[in-house]
Length: 285
Image (tube, rainbow, N blue to C red; front, side):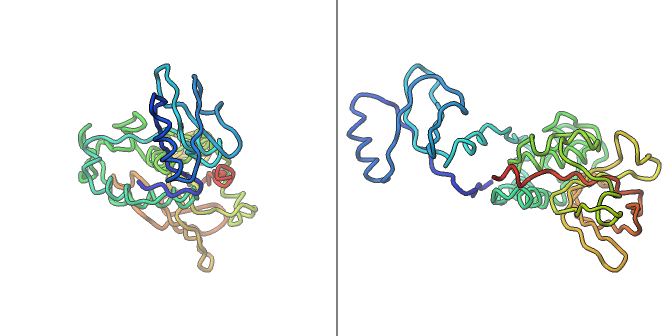
């Protein structure tokens, strides 16, 4: 996956050894950017100065020299975010290839949608090694469930969580969840009645998370029925068209329109109960 976020610079690391400084001088002439040295033990967040940021790479007692990696210290901490690891089966799949073609922009809303869209068509498997997305199984084995350690269980929330991590969105903005639980995601949320469609003031946006209660599940239940990522919301007359990208609908990732009418969030299969609204913009500052 290509990471094009603003401010990133290439890291160049050299050991501080005898005979090094003539080579360093040549490198500085070529780069036009001075390298700065730091020796000793440090964590990612305690070695920085102004617009320069450093982090210690060597695990031995020697010192290291690091060119600016990020424009400021906050951005270098982003390197400590959890990375998504991939199974061998998934890494050989077209869905992995599609993910690698996603260009992360640093706009978390756009990145969340782009990652989710790259997975459309992925199908669940029936056992641990059925993770390449080509299966049409019924036993809830997916790359997304594997990441959260919940394979064999419904995976719509795992899909949304995995997309957030693959988009490099901090868990402090949108947390992982293994169920359609409005508090587990750790982000602000609004009931349908709090949206402009239900008489309130909140306008749902792309990148929000929708939680549904299908018929037979109380809208007041702690764990609701389904989780989906909002792709778009628009109106047509009295209809509200909520376009989502969702995992685990009939065992696949799909893009779908839910049509709601009235002030209660009624959709064909039940109700759209909550919009989870991560403060993406705060994390981008």
